[in-house]
Every structure is written in structure tokens, then in C-alpha cells.
Length: 508
Image (spheres, rainbow, N blue to C red):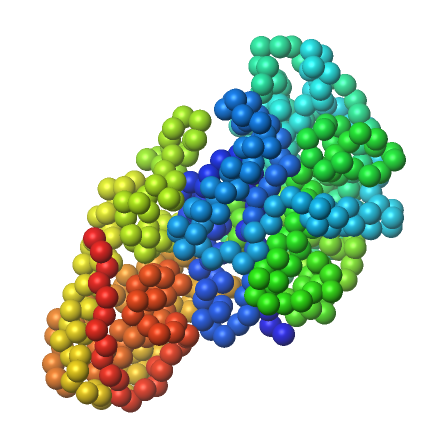
């Protein structure tokens, strides 16, 4: 079995997805899974919602709603946004008894084999409420990059930030109240114990430059013990007697959640599993690939891999396809400031094929990139809708003319075009921007070919357009669905004749 398991880590359930989310992991994961299936490979795509992050509590307080209501509403919004953008998720995982049991079983195994340790940790403490503060409950300066943010994982540099190490910490919900420090005994996972295995692992997997820098920075010194439990009440109750009243640290739900989302994805596609982690077993034939932002890399790639190594018997992720931030008019998307564009909002104004193409072309793969409506409309017209509609009109002129011959040169060109697309789609060098660039380049070439088409070359044009549509189908989903009876790749690249069919147009 050569099964591809695609995972996008679950976003926190404190709001809808905006274009920054979509241009990062979600669209890339969808395109990857679609291409794999078109190429004849089994592919499962899992994501969902993270219901236990305390960002939900702080967002709910700001909005004046109950946290439980906010997370349910957010999950519904995200489902609808993904569907609106044509992002096909097989397994959408949220909290529930089945997921909670998987989390408990995962950490029971690590606890039972002695892989977890107790440790006394310093926390900022709010005397007026008697609360230890962590993650979204406390903000301050990152001790590594000095950026202002929350405890947990620094959004700027991606390194783990212990709450007690924040520079000038302050309560998020009560910023004017003084804090003090208090100690609590928690369970931790000693990541440094697995340094040798991690160094060997990262030496053999492909990484984009941002991730490579993060891994190099993390491995430059001792890897800190990572929390497994926290002294707070929002989350899944921890069953361990050493830490009564604590919860499982939400950042550490990632690996069992990934297994849960995979199981849901497989079941949606007809599988019957003996266990929820069955497709993560070493002999399952699964290849696991994550699509994620840099700020999710440390808990998944470093701590998650170390925990799978400790457990043994599981597949290790083959690749992490990371992304940087996607900005709106050169500023970070911000729901609280109203500086945001949602996928559903934009899809009500612009055909989603145009949105998908533009987000691919401007995907923040290696550095921060930017979205504006003006650029979307300008680029779409000059590089997509204009050329395609001229090509479609040229092909339509040959409909009902009977089979048209395809030259050997056209067959070689079509084959080479499919290879060019595959260079961007294949996992080792996966790149949405590369695929979008190839799509625009090849469409421009076909536009020039269409302008010079004669009776002798009409078959060559029609044949290459068919192959182009198949190669573009993971991005231009509606155009391909309207034009093709199937989207298998590479299609009949070696056909010596073609019967032209009337082609749909792209709306402007």
C-alpha cells in the first residue's frame, strides 16, 4: 500500500478562517491530495478544529460569549469556508469521547513506560483570581527573538516559550493587575533524551529554509523539557495521580489528534479500522506529510517526532511543508482590528478558481507575501481568464469537425508539460507558486499557439489543452469539472488523435 496521509494542524476554534489561513496550509494540502488521487494514489486529508486552546477562552471573553458556544460556532464557520473554497477534507476532527480516549491512551502508554517525568516549573500567577497563567492567558516578550506575544510557542520565531520566561509578563484579560510568580509541579516530556534520533531524522527529511533555520536554532542548545500537563481547568483532564486537577497541555494533543483525523478520513472513504492509530503503524504503508505554519513546527516536528520515537512502532512523518505569514495590504490579518478577508466573503465576489489560482501564485512559502483585491483582479485577468477564454474560443471553432490528428511533436510537448507540472506537485519539491507559475506559462504558450492555429495544427492545440486542464485541475477545480469527465493524470498524452469538445469559460 502506498497511502498518502495529508495533515493540516487544526486551527484554534476562536473564529473563521481568513485568507491568511487558506493561503498557508489548507489550500496546499488540498492541492497535494487532489494531485495524488489524480495520479492514482490513495490519499487521505485530515484537519479539524482545536477545541482546548485557551485562546478560545480569551476570545470568548472579548466577544462576550461562552467559550463552548464560540468553539462550536467557529467549527461550523470553518467547515463552510473550506467547502466554499473547494478544499475537500476527508476527516474533520473535533473534541469528543473518541478523541479524548485516544489522547488518554497515547499518554497512558508514554506514562506507563516511564517516558514522562514530573518537574517543578515557575508560572506567572494572578493573585486576584488564583490562576496560573500560560499560553493565551499571559503576554510578554519572547526571551529568544524579543517579539511581543503569548507564552507557549512564539508566533515570530517558532521556539517554545515557557510562561515563566516571558519578559515583563502581564495578564491578557486583566492587564493592569500585578502578577507574581509561583511554582507548580507538572508532567513533562524530556525531549533532549531523543537528540540523537532527532538529529538523524532532520538530516534526512526535506525542509524549506524557514524550517531548517528553526530546527538549527532549536538544536543549537539543550532541548527543553516540554509540558504534558498544565495547572489550569480548560482542557482535557489529566488522569495522572502526580498532577491532580491538571489538564493535558493542548499543544501536546497534536499527535493523537493527527491519528484521529486520519482515522476519520479513512472511514469517510470506506475503510473499516481495527484501531484509531492503525494507519500510523509502521507496517501500515502510510506516508505522512504535514502542511503547517512555522509556529506549529516545534510541537509537531520536534516534540511529536520525539514522542513517536519513544513509543516505537509508528511511522514518522516524511515531510513538513511549512509556510510563512500571508499579509493583507502589508499588515498581518487581524480579526480583532477588522483587518481581515474571509474565504467565504471573497468567494461571494470572485469565482473561487480565480481565488485559488491567486493564492497559489502568492503563497507565502519562503517569505511573507501579500494579498490585495486589486492584484487578484489584475493578475487573474492578464494571466488566467483572458488567455484561457481566448484558448477556449479557439478550441470551440473545431468542435464537430471529427477526430483531428495529433503530431508526434505535440505529444512530446504535452508530455513535457505534464512533467513541468509534476515538478511542482511532487512532494519532494512541492510548491504552489511553482505550479501556479507553470500554469500561467503554459497557458500563455497555448494562447500564442491558439492565435496561430491552422487546420493542420488544430489537433495539436486541442490535445495539449486537454493535458493542460488535467494538470491544472488540482487548482482550477470548477473549470476542470466542467470541461473533463475525469481528471486522471497524465491522461492520453500519447494519443495520436483527438475529438475537440466545447470548453467552458472562466468568469471575470
